Image 1 (cartoon, rainbow over the protein chains, first blue to last red):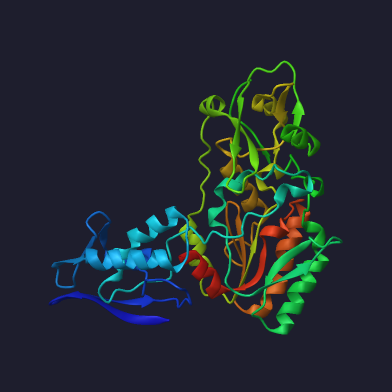
Image 2 (image 1 turned 30 degrees about the vertical axis):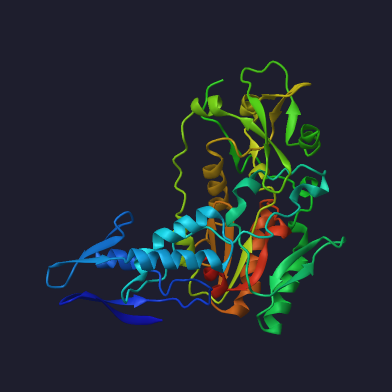
Length: 211
Length: 188
């Protein structure tokens, strides 16, 4: 959705056409301003000062300051919504100053953290218990989980040979995607033995190091 | 015990007459499992950082906005799908209480693992990237402007996956998710 958006303090203002993306999310923000808009504004943002400066059309410099009290409230509210990982909360807090005034955003949303919930599943289980051969599990906090209703689709012989699909699509699309998944079920690995590995001639990892 | 499993999965093999040797640390993961972790601090100091460009995570979000349907794919045991260059295998040597081993596959602890992985993804999905697909290291997103295009877009991606013997981890894949939901995940 494109909206003409005015950033103003008193007499000084700047008006931009900003593309918004509407997202149905439980969050304490009304808007997030993305990099595109910040760049278009020529804005300089300072997190410790909770302020943002940019030049108005008439050349005066506009300073938009955040209300620390309001920022604190937003922060507290964001804590209540869902138990996010701590790192994410901190990152969210740095975003809060962008909330005040009728500010706007373009199509980018900056945080990369995600909800942490049942992402840690059973990667290594097929070859042993207690250990997990997937090295990333430590770094997995940002793996996606969706609040869209999900269903599982069976791809292999066993009951655990499933993957997840969203449910909010037309039946036709659901069937098409399911058909493609099932006909490509050999591309899913259930244990390391299902993994042929990339042809070393195509790609292998070299260390830039003399013997 | 984990060493035996790594060996069974043919990720590592025994090694004699090694020039490099690293220590092993066991790390407890958040899910309570133990993970073997080789400390390559010294080895990583000895070679240059790969300057292959990694895309920015912001771009992934920008470029998936406005699409009706998305699927998130995940590669099985991802980095380990890439083999080590044979003469370099010996340098990944690490010691255990019984024997010395070295890696046959690329592992997380090597400092250029992420760029090698991105390079592989860029090669495999050349031509699809930016059109029906976005990749940020281990995050793969298949995107369709219209929901009904998703099946065909996925098929094109699967063709590449098959051609290059990549394997996916069904546990961490999410198919046909509404675009808005993906963004809301990215925000929250």
